[in-house]
Amino acid sequence: MSPTDADPLLVTGRLVIVVVSLFLLVFGARVAVTRRFPRAWVRFARPTKRQRSQPVRIGGGQAFMGASLLIQQAPPLVPMPHSLGTALFAVALLLAVTALGWVILRRD
Image (tube, rainbow, N blue to C red; front, side, top):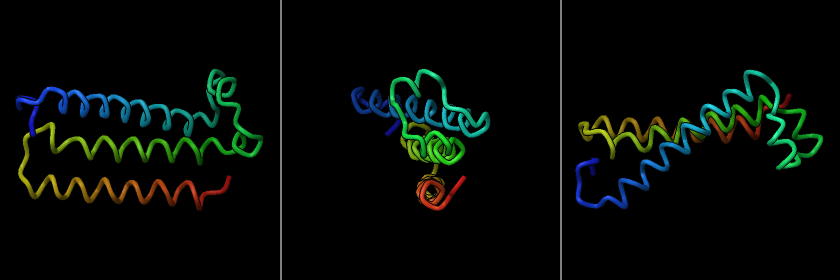
């Protein structure tokens, strides 16, 4: 699968996933670094008192998940050898497990 393949719907879906994963990565990193949730998110989502006290945990988990999604979409969109694609998939799975562990085990 590459961007020049005949199925534009599949390529469009993959590009949407790339955009969403970039948003997750940037937004999660911003929350983790600034240690504050954006006001619009607090107003809209209404996190509990416990969730509001853990921005590093929640932001870091989102950043890890965004990176994992982004790496998973690289092999189908960018031409590369099969072994490199397999290695990137393994890295994406490792990042997903790290994100899960980060959210479950991290306490602020």
